[in-house]
Image (spheres, rainbow, N blue to C red):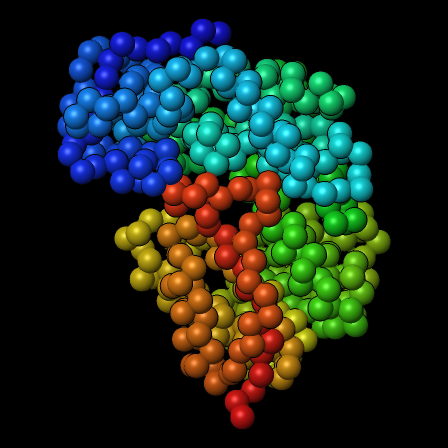
Length: 410
């Protein structure tokens, strides 16, 4: 396909474009002074500062509050098929460098394209062994998604990695903010959407059709391994277990028992299936329950665990709901701490970029005070390296993961 570059030009207001100038790729609707020339939403246009200085090329969408998403900052590098291919090749070379694995490269599961952090805004592609799952959330890249997929296949094939099939999971509600319909389904020939992957030596069935988001949360790979190292011979509680990934890492590391809890009946059934796949069904058991209701019940029964893991969904997806989210994070951490034996460990995280690092750590500290516990921070971690953080692109830094030793008050 040809990539259409309009002759339109957008101009920033004086003093605007702060995120862009800090290294990010987004320009918001209230930062634009005017647009000269004709265009269609999704077209690539030029962006200039208020004084006419060339800022780059990006695609425009007047429906979205993110008015322009930048694709290139250099005037001599307009957006072409060749530029897109270079971005994809750079992304793949980066993954090969940072995702150390003993498995054959064709079996590697990783986030292949992470939107803005790979300079391909609004598009995410996960590689699950020989299957690609794409999530497209922005109009401009949505229009070129088939080109992007074809180029991904080409780049991977150069390393002997043949892709068996592609599934689209562009069914997130946020697409509506771009004026896009929510869609899911095969791109190309149908295939078995239940894919087996291996991570940290643990095998999983990934349901790319019906699982959450793209089917599996690859961003916690190293964090799962980190907390598992504390679990040999231990009694473990894994809250918001999803399909059992933290629970099974702990069980495989030699935990004496693991209880995984999730509100999704489908998730628990998938977790049980994953436990059987690894021969860990006698160590890891799963319960379908609301974590917020279950933890107080366990406390009343006098239950205690050596390790408690809290991996909740994002409690906030906007700045407006931060206060409510903070209350949720504080409550769940306080309840979790009360279930940890004196000297045991709490692993806790937030996957919302609106819940920044400083606020998250303060919220945990407040929870410890109310729980009458003392915390020793063992380790602070972030998302896996295949989910790179673009400096200046705030949305790309979202996962905060902390391991604490929990001690009773002196």
